[in-house]
Length: 133
Image (cartoon, rainbow, N blue to C red; front, top):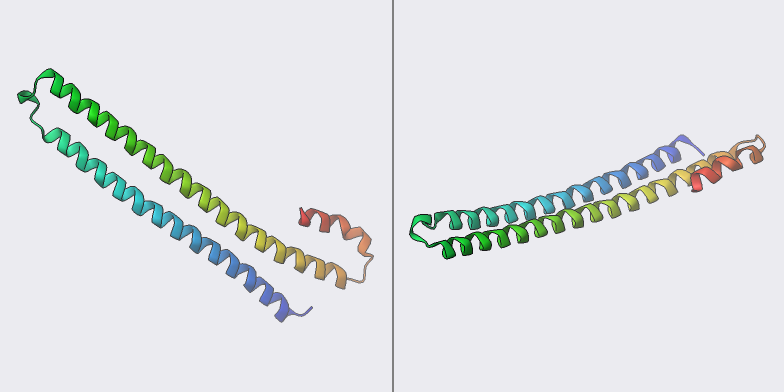
C-alpha cells in the first residue's frame, strides 16, 4: 500500500460524501419549493376569505365561510406534513446509502492495512469485527 493508493481511497470517500451532501441539498431545495408553493396558495385562500365583507353576510353564511377556511387549513397542514415526512425519509435514505458506501471503503482500507502489518493479525480481528458492523 502506498500513499497514492491511500489518497485515492480518501478521494473516493470524499466524493461519496460530497455526492451525498449534494443529493440532500437537492431534496431539501425541492421540498422548500413545494412548501413555498403551498404557503402561497394557502395565503391566497385566506385573503379571499377575508376579502368577503363580513357585515353583509348573515350568520349562516359567515359560519359557512369559517368552516370552509378550517377545511382549507386542515388540507394545508396535511399537505405540509406530507412534504416534511417525505423529505425526511428521502434525506435519511440518501444519508444511509452514502454512509454505507463510505463504511465499505473504510473497512477495505482497514483490512488492507491490517493484512499488510507484520504483527500477529489475530490481535486485530476484533477491530475488523467492529468496523464490519
